[in-house]
Picture (cartoon, rainbow, N blue to C red):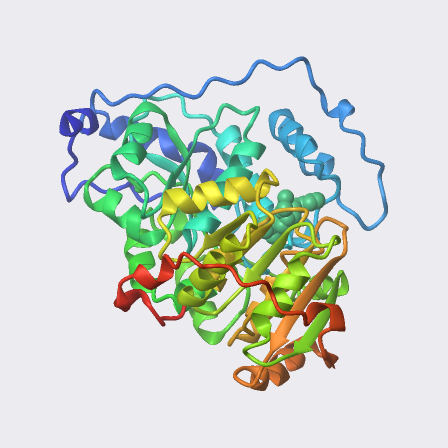
Length: 477
Ligand code: AMP
């Protein structure tokens, strides 16, 4: 059934090289010739485009943003009305620095290599580029199931879901289809969606994407724009061999547009950027010092035994509305989850061993304001963009100083101020100097206030963590 639907494609059938003109010009003409050349190999698989939602008449003049010197408005970038409408709905007014510095180049079809962390607006920067390209170059020929026009690869499932959410919001009025492929979720469900709708924008983690490519359920040889997000994390997580194979399945670098983002520009990242991009425009946005400006940071010196009592009393304070608690190890997050649940809190947990469907539900609950507390590890917690987090707790200090900045950046978002509380105990206080060095400032260490030192009441804890297989215990993340 599937075979018939997707057709088969011989191994030596390759995309035609398209390196004669500038990429910007190429992008407007590239897709047609290849697609019609291939029509016989994927016959029977033409899909329907998404229908656009019917909305009452909207024009850019409804999106009033005053001209301000030194700021770039989205109106000034030549974006389509459908995309501007999505941007207006999101409440964006002016471009963030990464957007203002990259969009004038990327919208012309140039490659971009950007140094930018989460929180800078980099996701919208690459999505606006991708969406504009797709809308400027509509495909008139037949299209086939599983042919991705734009591919975004990111290292974690959470990040993929987050990018896809942003993509859905920005494409709301465009009729473009957004698909996600991540491990841990039902393969067949993901496949079914691919069968039924054009793959305009595909957001994926490397492993699951490769499964789809190997099974010939996804074709990347028509991919016009490739985005590699968090390249440094991909390196750290050992994904580069998989990413290489994925890139090999896309058109050659002078026949596609490539946008690569990384929080750091290490030698290795720049080396990959060199291999995968052509004459890129380079943009560097300095680390999230903003996050630390909008976050009141406390470091409580306490013993390992005192930590839970302080945490318990802290989350009960009236000003603590929603809190993310970070710990370094999965078993610590599960133990905390069990104990907080036993104390009657609305709590969720995000760590690498929690089933993906459960993680998605937990994030939805957090976004909807149905959870007071989320306990998370760094990988699972990275890139969570939920407004209204009033507090972040570092139950254990992160081993990587950068993770401290990522963690506390989950609060104090969207113009609000937040509070971070880090516990420094005999096991991890030695990590503070590295964090202070990265922040460029000393952190004031305090004794926890008297009212937080009271013993937490005794409750019986149903320890689901204890039932977890031993091999899952004690590994970081
Ligand atoms: P990112 O760095 O992509 O993770 O984005 C961080 C947050 O900034 C997200 O919640 C976006 O919705 C928001 N954002 C992105 N661009 C803008 C903008 N131009 N104006 C206001 N908020 C933005």
